[in-house]
Image 1 (spheres, helix red, strand yellow):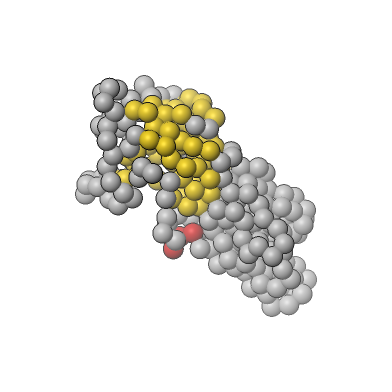
Image 2 (tube, helix red, strand yellow):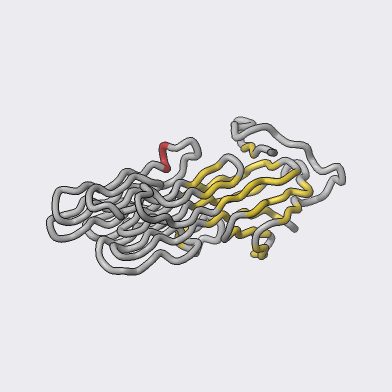
Length: 241
């Protein structure tokens, strides 16, 4: 599989190796996969389900930016881990895209999302009647005792990124799950993060320790105490004109 690499003032930074450029000496990157839209001079590929991103032209000095968001956890769940990478060089070829889905039962966290080697961890689930589970962001602890919130694992993962811990439960109220923007606080889920691609969409918010709302599809938001998590998403952009 082709690898991604990063450029910057200090030169190449290690996602992998710089790949071959298009033999046709194209002026801009060309690629297929996902739902394709445009915004200004950018082309945007949005993956709401798993698929393949295929690069067919990659001229020198042209780069991609992308976000990878894991699925949100269920039942006071944590938001999915949020990863943003900019200035990435992609070689010609195909890249696997996985979009994480909510999980249930004894699963400790929701499904991971990934683009090539970059992984957004699924948010912690809060199904079990005890401590919140760890995940991209951690689930809130349950009510009825001294149950603690789960840890946010995304920032210390190999892919880096954003995620926070869930809130502790109290005797009467379950804690809210952590989000990419902040920790859970009391029964309120942590805030999400504005998309680094469009600057408008909010991803990876934590679920509340009360209520029954589920996270919306392809947001990575956690579900409330009686709600399911929202599935993840992968969004890629590059200049096309």
